[in-house]
Each structure stands twice: as structure tokens, then as C-alpha cells.
Length: 424
Image (cartoon, rainbow, N blue to C red; front, side, top):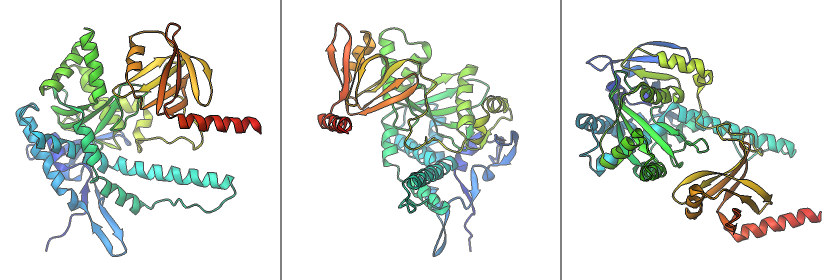
């Protein structure tokens, strides 16, 4: 009679074995960023938790760990093929589909994903109750989910991956090769999402997003948003693209590795693992000096338990200190996204009249229609978010434009609301 294992992995052993310190692939170096300590651990004990995928029901406990076996079996197969080839050349569509599948699954099965779900549920529950208290109502139809309900949603959500797989396959996929003596590290949250555009988010579908998954101390699989590829190609056409950008484009176009060797490059990828991990960093090297330096410089990274932050309900988001001061529009167009400095001339509920300097950026924005959304910022604080927007030219010579809604029905509603307010 066989007994089911109680130790369930949110990072597959097949991936951690690539970072092992022994030929038997049984041990690995670990850094606990909450305690600031490093040690050697058995791989079977890493990226795991007892009964992590066991749910309690009225019929007893149900162990769902076995659901992950087929996906976990894909990790060593597809990653071995990539590592053996040293390139993405030679991979077929099934291989790329497997890469997208294991990446999407890994993104949604981690502890930080589960704790994020719990955080969102808690914040919405408390905010709803606060509003009801102000309205002198005691009962709410919104119930806080139990830890078992959160766990169940998390487990089954990690297999509902159709949209994520499609999104990943639509990006530029390339291989990053480590040519230095400092190895890549991996963490308990291996899939990293980074956006170098300060106004943009870090969701899988966000424009400008870059996604990284280390598969060994020498290789990282990268996914690059097509809008970022477009910006690199524009710079290439104007002859202003630097060597790293040219290498990245060539890697995406020709399926050849993007070689990185300087210290800054390696530290960037490793620091992303440190900052975005839930608690643990794993490596085949016991040098965790970068982790110590990062935690010392950014103490809040020690307790990174949610990938999102919810502001107080009914209030505007806090200022984005990464943005320049002054007035600007962040324009998400049909193909691209850009930040446009402006000067507001007149503002109402239904429109914003603004001026802007005539240049190449303005021309690109005006041609990139229909717009998905436009955000208006003043001194780093978001003042308006306009869905289904359009920009109309008032006076091209004077550089005057009107930002309004594409849906004229919305304009009529806003104008009617304003009339009623004025009539009170």
C-alpha cells in the first residue's frame, strides 16, 4: 500500500535540481530573506509546504498534488532540450506551447499568488464593511473567503491558463545566456514580471511588460511585449539603438541566445528574483551578498506577500513618484503606449482641451488609434482615466487638441449629470 506524500511543491523539484550543488541533484543553497540567513537544504524540502495542495471538504481531505504531475513532467523535458541546444532554434510549436504552459502554471501556483488572493479578499471585505457602516447598514452580501476557499480557488486557477498561454505565445520569446562566472539564481516566485516604463503596470498583459523564468544558472527564458519590440525597432531605424538593444532584437528575431556577461546585467536578473520572492532564494552558489545588500537597501522587500496594492476605496490612487512632475497623458494606443507632456487649457467632465509641442512623438500618438485608454496625470497624481477615448485636433498650428470620449453617449450622460448638479 502506497501513501500519498504530504510535501507538496509550489516550485517543481525538476527546476530546482538545475540549481543543485551536487551531482546527485539532492541539495541546494538557500537564502531566507526574512531571517537574513543562508544554509544548505535538501531540494525535496525547498519550494514546498506540507499539504499545500490538500483541501478540506465535508467528505474529508482531498489531495490535489497529483494534478500537477503532467505539467511538472514537462519542465525537465523542454528545459533539457533548450539547455542541450543552447538556443531556441530547433524548437517546434509544441515546445513553445510547453514553455508557455509551464510558465503560466508556475506564475499562478506560488505562495505569493495565494497570499495575494487572500490580501485582495481581505481588503475588499473590510472596505465593503466600512462603506456599509457609513450607510448604517450592518449586513453585507460580500463574504470573506476562508483559507480553504482561497486555497481551492488558487489550485484550480493554476490550471485555467488558456488566456495566459495565448498572451505568452503572442510575445517575443528569447533565450538569455549567462556568460559570466556569477550564476543566475531562482526563488520561490520564479516567474518575474518587470516593466521599465514607470507609468505602466506589471500584469502579464500590460504593454511594455518583460517576463523572465530562470531554467538553470546559465539560462533564462524571456518574454517581451510586442510594443517594446516595436520601440526597439523604431530606435533601430533611426540608428539610435544601443548594442544591448540590437542584441536583444537579434535574439528575438533569429532565436539565438542573448548573451549577457557584465555584472550589472546579472545583478539585474538576480535582484528581480530577490525583490519579488515570497521568502526564499535558491542557488548553486553560496554567495548571497547581493541578497544581503538588496534587503539592507530595501527593507520592505523582506515581507513581500502581495503582488498588488489596493488603495482606499473611493479615493484616487497615490501619486506615482516615478513620473515627472507637471501635466502629462499616458496614452495606450492600438499598437503602442507613450507618455506625452501637455499643458491643460480647459477641463470639464466630458473633455480636456490641451496644448502640446508638435514633434515625432505627438505624430506617433495621433496615428496610433483607436486608443484603449488614456490616463491624465498632474504632478504625479492620476486625475482622470478615460476609457474609449479620442483626441481631436482643434488647431494643429497652435498645437491645440481635445481629449474626450469616443462614445458620444457617455458625453451626453456626463453633460446631463452636470446640468442636474447645477440646477440643485
